[in-house]
Image (cartoon, rainbow, N blue to C red; front, side, top):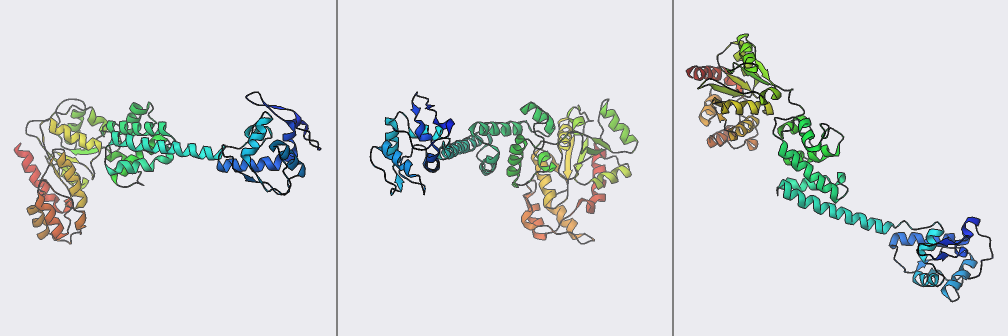
Length: 423
């Protein structure tokens, strides 16, 4: 191949060694070829590095480039030609000991392989999605929320390896959750760091999304969500209020008895409860109540009536205390608001073996009939099943009225004092 009649850049006049030992003739690195190589590189980026279909020639291509192309192709290539057959060009370059990709690289116009990158990225995402879906179903179960979770966390999971880790982290965290350990304790067990589930970590995003989808609110991220799932932020805040618990023994038990003697409710943290060896006298009757006002009234009147207050949705500490009292032989009952929320709480406690007390359809109808104030309404469709007395659900839906604990507080406490006194 003859040298062109123009002076090329000095740095590009040198022969460029190929990986296989072949060289790129310096003539092809002349600046007059730049528009052509740019055009070809752009086409290969769009179509793929192996694509050798014809490409349009850039406008105003130097006539000397046409001449050199004719030499490479082995036939006349006039300036009237507007397209270049890349397959023929590659064949001609091979005769000169090089190839198209080597020339483009040597000329500084190597294609980026964008199509191949897109295909690789698509394959990577497809592999990730398969692993997320299949592993999640295998480890977390076939429930609809699991598939919804897998779809929602893809933005935080770049590949199949991370997908496996995301499923493993979520599965292990949920297995560890038991309301008696803090989120930091569980993070340390699963992730090796107490800060592994702090805000800003991708592991927290994975777990938070699982909890929210399981709870039916994909956008939720609050303390109640984590606490209800058995992953409280700590085990010392939100203590469970108690009154007149007749705990036997020294240490905490003695402290609880001393507070009762002083007329003060005893707050017990989850940290305290989980390490407490609960012992009570035979026949002890304990009433769980939803509203702190009842415990307040019992303390103010110094009623000899053991009470535990859940203050709405029971915390891990409250559940642990109620279960420990039952295990120690106490008769543990619960009374809550007769509305949608209160009945849901009562139902969950009933599932744990804590019997609802004075929460029957007959009691409800009597309280509604004798109410001396206007009772608040309830969403009839939101009233949950009441398996301990199925008629109660029907009664509440028919009346559409809520009976809050404060409305029956005096009768309830008086009845509990009698029950506790018989033990």
